[in-house]
Amino acid sequence: MPESLEFLSLNFWSPLMAIGNLLILFLIVKKFLFKPVNDILDKRAKEVDSIYSDAEDMRTEAKMNKDIYEEKLKNVKAETDLMIKSVTERAENRKEEILKEAAVEAENRKIKAETDIKLAKKKAVDNIKENIVDMVIDLAQQVVEKEIAEKDHESLIDDAINKLGERV
Amino acid sequence: MERAIIMAACAIGAGISMFGGIGPGIGEGYAVGKACEAIGRQPETKGDVTSTMLMGCAVAETTGLYSLIIAMLLIFVAPGLFIGRL
Amino acid sequence: MNVEITGAKIFLRLPFGILITETQVNMWIIMLAIAILCKWLTHNLKVKPEGKRQVVAEYLVNMSNKFVTSNMGDRFKNFSPFIGTLFAFSLLCSLSGLLGMYPPTADLNTTIGWATVTFVMIVYYKIKANGLGGYLKGFMEPIPVLAPFNVLGEFSTPISMAIRMFGNISTGVVISTLVYAALAWLSSLALQWLPGVLSGIPVLQLGVPAILSIYFDLFSGALQSFIFCMLTVLYIAQASKGD
Image (tube, each protein chain N blue to C red):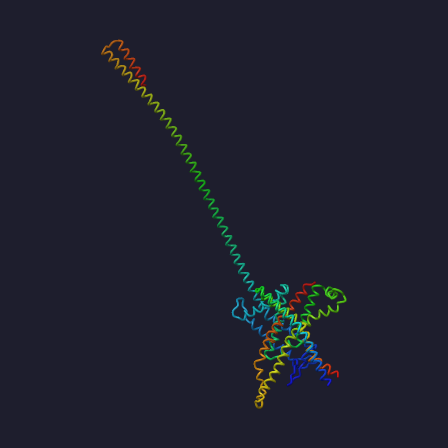
C-alpha cells in the first residue's frame, strides 16, 4: 500500500499545481468551448440582424412605393377634378350664351310681333275705313234711290257715322 | 499512558469544538424558515429566494466549518504533534 | 476493527518536495475528460443547429454567460469562461467521489489554490478601482488601530472559501469512510456463522452508502461548486465597484 498524505495537510507545491491545472483547463475550455460557441452565436446574431435589416429595407421600399402611388393617385384625382371643373365651366358658359341668345331672339321676335300687330291693326283700320267709305257710298246710293226726307237723311247718316266711330 | 491521555484530550476537544455546529444549525433553520415564509407569500419568486437562501446558508455555515476544521485538526494533526513532543 | 482516514495517496516524490498524489492524478483525468468533452461538443458547429450536441454546448455557454452578466454586469463578460471552467472543474472533482476516486476537492491544497486565484483577482480589482494607496488606506478604516483585524478580514475571505469547499466535501469522505467501516463490521458480525472467507463479505456495503453518496457527493458537491463560483463572482463584482 502506497503511503498517503495526512488527511489535513498543506504543502507548498500542491496548491500551485492546483492553480496551474485550473489555468490550463481555463485556456482549454476557453479555446475549445467558449470561443467556437461564442463565434457561432455571434454569427447567428449577425445573420438574424441582416435578415431583419433586409426586411426593414424591403418595408421602407414598399412604403416608399406606396407613397409614390398615393401621390400619383392624388395627382390623378386633382387632374380629373380640374378637367371636370373646366368642362362644367365651359358648359355653364355655353348655357349662359344660349340663354342670352334665346333672350335676344325672343326680344327680336317680340318686337317683330309687335310691329306685325301694329301693321295688322293699321291694315284692319284701313280696311274698316274702306268698308265705311263703301258703306257710306252704299248708304248714299240708298238715300239717293229711295229719296227720303231730308231730315231722315241727316239723322241716318249721323247715326251710322256715330255707330262706326264707336266701333272703331 | 501519556499517549492515551493526549488522544483522549484531543478527542474530547474535538467533540467540544463541534458545539460550534449548533450555531449554523439554528441560523440555517431560521433562514430556511424565513425563505419558506417568503415563498409562501410570493410563490413567483421561488427561484430567487431559493438561490439567495442557499447562498446565505453557505455563508452562515462558515463558523460551523471553522469548528469542523478545528475538530479535524485535533483528531488528525494534534495527536501526532503532541506525541512527537514527548 | 481498524479505520484509517487518510488523505490522498502519494504516487511519486519529485525533488524540491513536489508530490504527485492521487489529487493531482485525478485532476489530470478530469481535465482530460473536460477537454475531450469540449472538443466533442464543439466538433461540428453550424449556424443552424443540427442535433443535440450543439444545443447542449450552446446551452452551457449561454448559461455561463447569463450567470456572469446577471451577477457582474456586461463589463465582465470576459469572465464567463473562467467561471464556467471553475464550476465545471469543481463540480466534476466533487462528483468523482461517486466513481470511487478520491475527490480532489477533498484535499485542502486544491481548494486553497483555487481560493488564492480568487483572492488575487479580488485584490487586483480592488487596486484597479481604488489605486494602490486607496487599497492600503482601506485597512486604516475606521481607525488605524483596527488595521490588523482588517488584514485578517481580508485574508479570511479566501480561507473561508477554501475551507467551505474542503469541509463540505471532505466531511462526505470521512463520513462515508466511517460508514463503510461500520457496515463492514456489522456485516461481518451478521455473517459470523458462515465458514471461512464468506464471513468477510461486506454485504451491507452494497446499497446503504449510496444514499449518503447522493447527499454528500451530488447535492453537497453541486451546491458547493455553485457557491464557490457565486462567491467569486460577487466578491470580484463588489471589489471592482470601489468604495
